[in-house]
Image (cartoon, rainbow, N blue to C red):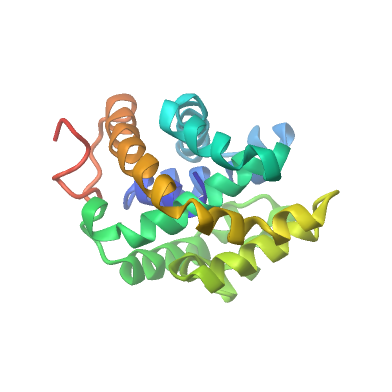
Length: 206
């Protein structure tokens, strides 16, 4: 999963969300400087990623585009699943997306000094460009893939990703709707402090 899902699954715990948000950017040395409550979010992020990568529905989705996306297939699915989360937002979240985004931007601004210095410009840029709303439209997802292509050794693969994903959108939607309730249950099992942002109808055991 990409940023949006990680933040929803963190709930309104600002330190947990900060660690979950930063996890993929951090070097080991940077992780060692974090406060324990922020590091808890880093560990939650890794647990979410491990569960996601092993889930049969995610593997099915990855296999659907492996032929063309090759090694980039898992990354493309992570991004597209955030788009599918937006499309199904009311089924999984008790807070409006715009409200969650505004809360997240405000908390990141307040905690910017807790972010390792080298990462602060990147975080500030993401806040300034209100990147969470990018996942609301296929055009926004296309922008994400274009940015990814600039860092890829084979940029043409990311540039063609959205078209290929949309060709199997129905199948990916079905995979996502099996997977995400299971992920919610897993997060609530390993981090049972409660998350008031998760719609009480989901996951499966709620």
